[in-house]
Length: 404
Image 1: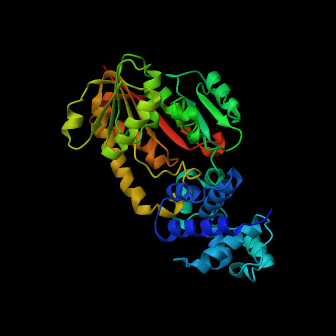
Image 2 (image 1 turned 180 degrees about the vertical axis):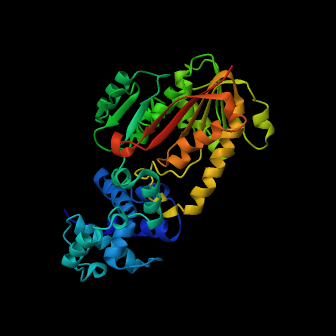
Image 3 (image 1 turned 30 degrees about the horizontal axis):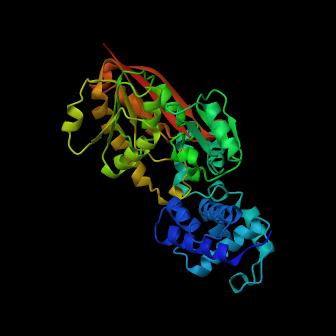
């Protein structure tokens, strides 16, 4: 187990882009992995995992290394040295790592790990908010679970095949998967692999989608032939799932504020063989008004803090600000009031977020049901999915029915 200079330099450059230039970790990692064609899978794995680990534990490592933002290159090397010592790597005699105080690092780790915000490497405000909303016990378990790297979960595209046939196809590529209990389309990778490079992916046999995220489309209770509207479609993971549950029959309208996201969805839909999707950009209020009381089913996958998907996006711990969460709650209320009008009498609505905060979830639904439009709906059921209980992303979903 030894450190290789070119891999470590790439890691340091990438951390600089994420911490000092505000770039998104997933984009930086994707770029880093293309840097050297000679790298084997273990080299790429080292680069990706090390970048994500140091991003995930940024606050803890910076405290141990006694460095403050903005981090210059020497600071980044000191944080890297902390990572290497705690991971048990022998420290090579490189100029940048000279005098690494291994005993001190281990001692400071033990000492700082007594404070939850440092141990779990999160901002103080986030720790306080988590305790306030979920209570000390639940929040402690949840933030620990959110610091575990996310598993790679595939969702079988049932427009093109079965879970069993997909599993066999991947087995031929030496990619081993396991079934997930109570998840009709999910396969879990036994070991991480770049599945996007496989022909199976290019042919649209599957999408990568978290297990709890896969529950949302099923919760909407869609049937072939219905008119369904996905109001915040984004790049369309859930839209594509809905299309497959509709067996391409009926009308599925995918809406979003951003044309770029819908363009991405169009490409994915083509690959998936999903051709019952219409695309509409929400550029005026007329777009929504035209659909009032027209849909059998409406999904509002609302914008949120993303505090249920930190394991997947560890850099969002450092990008999120408390003001953003205050603002997003207002947006959620507005979206729920506005888009719920699309549901026809007797139709159903699902409000979903990838947050674990009650103020973004059940409290929003309770507030909505007291509004003028909300009084026309009946609450049927909701699901609160915590990473600490399921091992997957944190999600919330509420099912409401519009009175006839």
